[in-house]
Image 1: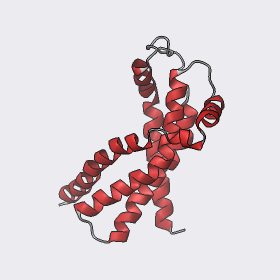
Image 2: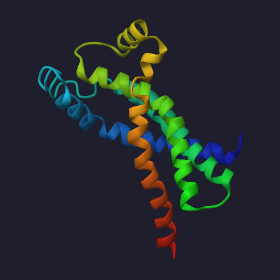
Image 3: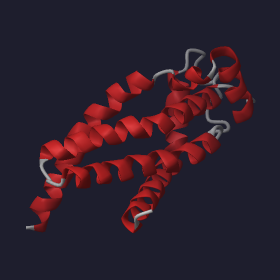
Image 4: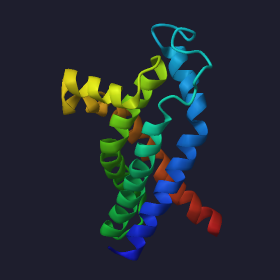
Length: 165
């Protein structure tokens, strides 16, 4: 494997893991506040790290896939135009969501339920919906992530050039 690809994978994995793990308690509180059963019934402030193992398992690969795909796509097209950055960001999101969506689904179910292990949640999803159940919300997640990345990454690339001048 190309040395640069390994570097892109590792940098993406570390960045994604650091962000997701540090913000996890805030995400748990948000999920419980939005829960149909209510904040307190969903667990309140107790066990705010419940479900974090699914994030730890999925965050690094999801971020690694995004950043390595984004960077490889930029290199594939060769030019460094905003259009190239936008296309690369879209492709990166499509690939990364293949990992991000299942782990996000498992995480949210763990955050909003009492006493169910990650294994129990995975079994429940698989038994009731099959493998497709893990990808529930894939298109809605893409509809949120792609526009964000379409703006963020071309802007980030342009600002890097502008600041370096």
